[in-house]
Image 1 (cartoon, one colour):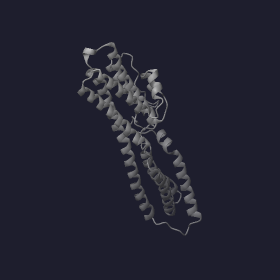
Image 2 (spheres, one colour):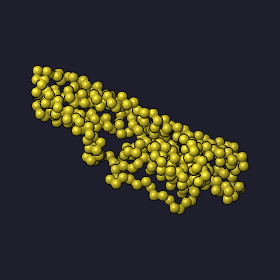
Image 3 (tube, helix red, strand yellow):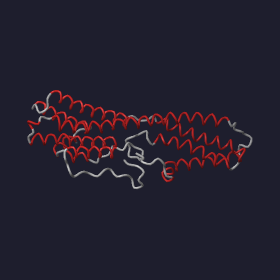
Length: 302
């Protein structure tokens, strides 16, 4: 997630330099062809105007849909933050104090730590990496069992539900409190499923492909049209038009997959680390991990 309001020139060029070179090459080629081979062919100025208007609407729709995906992902993980804190609070408060044995204390701790493991497993699953940070918060037997499943976060929730049922059968948790805790597990499953839906739904590639193609056509028409009146300056203005449309389009491309490891992603590392710190503090732990660091340039956090 970006932390600064302004982008540096370095980041702008990093995002657009390849397409910029292509645009400049097309502008030069269009100008030379128009001056040397198409002297008797005149492109009406209204053609690039109409094309530019159509492409602007196309890019606006593309960016709107991309931002909707990003914002939905952020809402989902905002809900997981709140539910995670409520889970730790409920596990510690809803169990019967009259049965507060060492075994119960260990079970409470296991339920909370295992939930941190669930969040790490879900984060790694969404980003398609295998950091295995979840193993720090599970026993070796549990980690080995979870590794057998294709969906490890879901397997961890199954363990949580099993232990919660065991507490209810031992009357450590009464019926109403059991339902409240079980509803939280259902919420975790909902958040997981919604995140997976966004992650596994491919944004239509036709939007990206045709937007780039139409932008290149617009650059060619604009350069050829301006070449008849301002000569070589048409190359500069053709590039400016192409840069504006492409940079606007890039804004949408960068956020259409919100869980990827990019500067514009939903900051899952930071969110999970914050939850981890909150839950460990709730249990009275003193040794806490450091907050997720920002990038070297201080402009984004993952």
